[in-house]
Image (tube, rainbow, N blue to C red; front, side, top):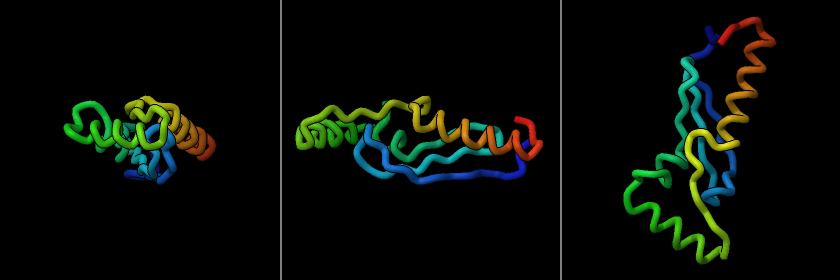
Length: 88
């Protein structure tokens, strides 16, 4: 059991070319503001990402909740919790 309810971090996400906030809940479920804004099912926002891709001349695409950034943050939290004697 974790010793916290939620924890979050804000990072620059090069996949969508802006800062996003990653939230991890005590049950290890995850929310990412970049995924909510640009992920699948986000409606017309994907058109905005395509337009920005053309402007930057590189492909922008949200990689979902299993992207490396989210996985690394969860791994960091898991390591910290293991060091404190908490179990996942």
